[in-house]
Image (cartoon, rainbow, N blue to C red; front, side, top):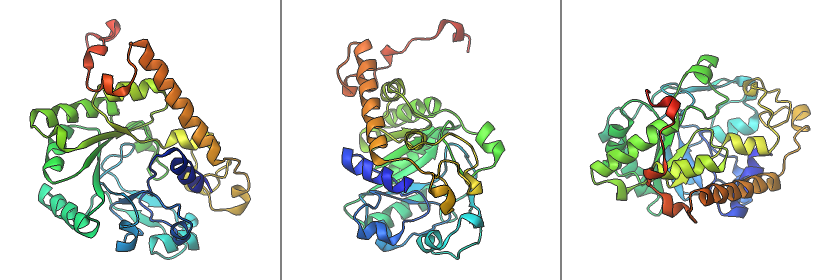
Length: 307
């Protein structure tokens, strides 16, 4: 229900929604509410030709900001018959996403995968999700040369329900570090006009959006913000199938506690847009286009100058 409400909300306001790495249930296709962005991750769960061509964009998730260099694990208790059907798996078994994509060990491998996906879905865009980290600028240049249409920089402040506690608490760098490095590297190599830059990682207010635009982002992803709009209280037990607000669970007695609605998501994003307008007005700008890449709007905090 929670995912469905997000899909419906994004469709209503003209946004795009991401399927995540677990595929989609067949009835989403029948009801016309399937995600517009289809994700391919290391486990390849739920991935086939029908799934990939049903969207406007195919995303290759190399890694996730909240758990860089690590895979994921969906506990068997959460692998219901519906989930197993969507993921082409067996109910009740743990589903492991390995740390690397085992068919990508070089830029040439990535280029081949991007080529194959564009042959499968000629009208769709291909995005590559990277994590904010060391040398991400150099990596992004290679991704752009490999033919990606969109590069996503994922920050460590984002959420995940499928990582160890050590990763969630102590891994990943903020998107504010990786994004400007990618933007500058692409500019230096005359590749900036070839790709769209997208970022994510715990964005929750207008100031985040304006800052991201100044640092070079053109698109933004939201995850945790939308879950909070649906009633998430950050209980941090997503993996236990006992979510107290009925969002991250398949147990009917907990699902009955879900009080979210698509209108809550729509209203949250509208409030976010209004907050963006307020932040822009503070610096005398009327649109995000006016501040894109304009780092003169940023000032060094006097207490942090030594850093």
